[in-house]
Amino acid sequence: MIITFGRDKRCLRLLLLMAGLGAIIADNAFAQTTRGQETPQDTWKAAPSPFRPDLQRKLSAQCDRWAVSLTRWKACPEASSNECYFFRVEDKLNHTVAAFRLANQTAQVDALSIVGGSRVAVLGRALPILAVVTVVDLASRKEIDRFVCGGPVPSPDGRFVVYGKFVPAHPGYEWSPSAEYLIYDLTTSAEGNRTPPNRGRPLDPYDVGWPLYPEGAKNISGDNLFEGHDVPVHSSASWFFWLDKSSTVAFVDRWQGVNRLVVADVSGGIQRPKVHAYPIDTGAVVDLPACKSKVAPSDFEAWSKDPSTLISVTDIRIPPENAHALRLHFREHPCVAATVLDIRLVSGARGNVPVRAEPSAQ
Image (tube, rainbow, N blue to C red):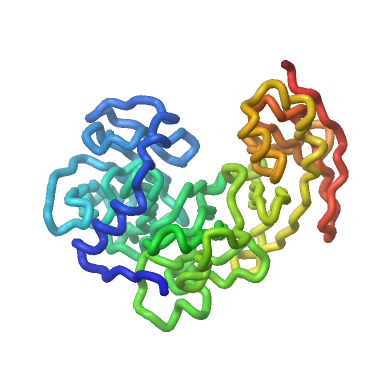
């Protein structure tokens, strides 16, 4: 069975605590910030700040009509995070000033973005690796929607957010979480961001968004947990990368010993994404015999059983000389022989042709 926690604060805090064990390691990747420093954030292009709620920054965003600022914050027991955030909203068209308060799971606010000319998206975190996205209508200053997720990355125009599905609390070793990749449209309704199985229940921050991958995913409760510790599951091998200023996002998924470059075009809407998956030839990237003498015997034995786990993609972009390919950059490793690989995109196909492989400089 799957353990399901209630929505009261005590259970939520326990859930968040379980989800965040060991997550402090991820905090080291971010630059330091200073409490009280105001930072304009019209988009989410800047890297997130470290997860330091005690160093919360002032933030602001604006468009032609609206200007929104995070002005202050204070402890308040009614919020699940024990922290409330206060925002100033200026309507430049009607020359009025109002305010709203955010009191939910958000323990730190990372960025603000005004989307659709009438909404502000508040991107925050409950824990270092557990994000909370809250959507507020600026005219009424009411919360429209909210969802929890992992690693959210907004599109260049701020309309879409792609992210990993939240993994609910579970009994542990006998259950295996599997990656599921979802997308949210900040310009549509809360109901429009729920799949049909999730529309018949009250809105909550779980199972929100439309699935991009794996193929056939429905984004229903518990569909990213499988019983057993040795069952095949999907896992992420990269961050999310939006391609230039388009509505196409790319990422790498690993399943059953094969890494796949997944390319999803959502220009036609999140309910009808065009998704193609291109297998990555592990042999074009990993050279196990060459690294046998450079690593511990136990590590080499484990990697020999599944060399696909050695592939970690750090960047995906369109090569300037070939608009019909994507260039993948791999994290350097003693067993990685090529740090760059071009994959030609074949329309309507699920195959790939390596265009170029550059040896790693050792």
